[in-house]
Image 1 (cartoon, one colour):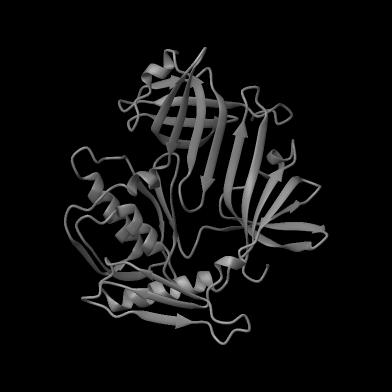
Image 2 (cartoon, one colour):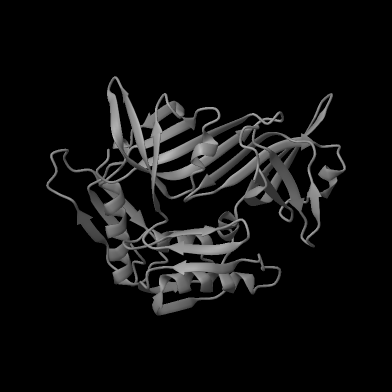
Length: 341
């Protein structure tokens, strides 16, 4: 086990398509971001005239980041920008495998009837991996989809990652994740783990920022599907002393009336209950006492001026900023749990 009294030790390696591993001895400005939804990234800089830089091939090479010998991220390098003046710097951006799937299209129509949502996800991924040059190496690791069945029709040209995102967002949907060993994980209704850990401002939290989500509030939602096969559905959470706040959304790929209803209800559930978003920068030396994971439920405590909050929050983002000397800043993105604020 690593000596936790020492600064955290970060190692970067690049992984070629044929499996060759190349350590990166020189790098700087490392940022590793993990998100429970959206895109997770790794960005860093390195000397562009190094031997290692010549082995980076955009869209083919992966970067793997280790913290204290624990693999924290595996991402596909999508851009490597060259910057030359007196020195030569290469700025690298790498994204997670969910993002790669968001650029993958279906090449023919596919219909699922009474199929569990996890099987729909794994089938879509297997479908794109069966195409020429399409294999990403993703395999099912855990299908905790709750046994919820869906009817779905997807068409040629639909983006696979986007369709999985949409499926996950309906009532009784799921969270999905591709881990650092390319295992596919599905959790219904969401990824979560209750902990007893407490984040307290001025104790183990050095800086805390709260972003108001009031502007995201909507209590009337209308959703449109394919106009040739469905009719719009409007749902609401009225009456409401705040008045009437409306939102509309659509997807022409939705061809079943039941699915339109599911999308409308899912959007209303989210938008009628916006919850506070906090960014908590962990105090120096305190992260290794916490070592939280995405989905963990923690207690956040702050009492200063108008901000008086003490309640459960879910970890939805973890970001590491690391300098070349090993200095590390860890910031958590926290979403207040329903009823907590």
